[in-house]
Image (cartoon, rainbow, N blue to C red):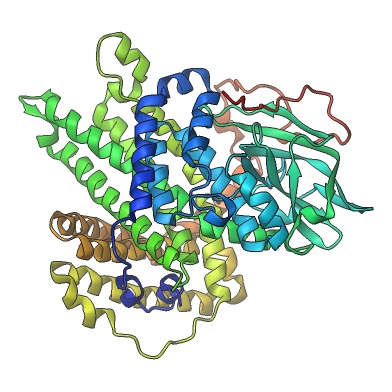
Length: 566
């Protein structure tokens, strides 16, 4: 059973979330997180990573020594065998040190080789490769220059030969690809898209570029060329043609990684907003006492609590394995990435000119160096990778439309169980009513557009956004009920804010400019308004919008980075 699927059917199954496994961590997890925190505080120079756009070898080796690359790898394969909740908290620690550290660990354990091998690997593959994942770095590469969220257009080929396959193609934006020891590579075999384990020292494997981005400095992301790369038959993960299932399943299990990072963004933002808003005085009062700033602080605090609630509640249920948390994970990724960006933007506004100034510049003139502008740069990617906001809305909606959710007896109506939530009960009752209205509007949409409802992306997007709000509200109430005390105040604040957003989204389901906007966009694309573009210069560097990969061997030096053991 799935809370998320039931939600779209109009049933707020609070009972599925309220059966929350005990809070707290086991002693092994606590001990590991304490060691990780000490390492990050004492051994990691975040400003050095930001300046040099590179994680030092000694930091990577130190993380390996701690077992940070093997948090969720079972102990039988040499890993720490710790729960997902511990992994999420570890991401919060390393990301608040420097964002690239979280991407390094997440790309390896969330979508790298670890999850595909655990879920689809043969016993022999697990015995041979999972112990290597304890200290060797992996990644996952699917994207190509002309392929983003549409994996069926993959051009990289896997041609069967004696003893295995030969891979040919060019891959783009390969997180960890620059320094990985081995990778999960998606390629088209005769039986369809398939997943292969590729060694990065194999002949024909070349890292041609290391990409540079708006944020996430230190991220080892590159362009990889595969030319006549031989892959043994026993390096095929799962049956031929099952590559997409491998990729999606790995994403499902790692979906809460980004929400955990977003929760860390909110936690740090709240700390900075609180401290700064007390000492910065304008018009004879601390700025936090002014209503315009106070509303921003309240938004950061309430939303930060909701993000932690989603990660903790869904993460613990995912560890327990009793309920299906895939839809909740997708909703969490969607909601968290959008809210973390808003939080970062609001923090810049609270800090004013100092929010736009780099930490190095502020420190050089004698003030505390607070990397708020870096937070804004680093956070922006969350709305794009691991499924862009727009694509994820469509994916969730398509999945829900295709699934017929059966009834599971008559669960207790949320309204009936709301009494156990005390003052939060009114919010549970609201979410219950809103879920039923949401299902009704989805049914109305299906009746109106029939099979074409899948093309109504804005309508479906609002439906999914409302569901995400209701899920966040419910998780917040469940989490606050377990924590008690001041957590109830934060849950109440979040639900009040969320209810306003639900009302606005609901109104736009009925009254909107969607049809008119589509017509305007069509005229823009037909060059009807090019006169509006006159009077400015285009500073873009000349070149094709999408580079067409030229087949054949690489003509560039191999930029693959080997981590030196100290």
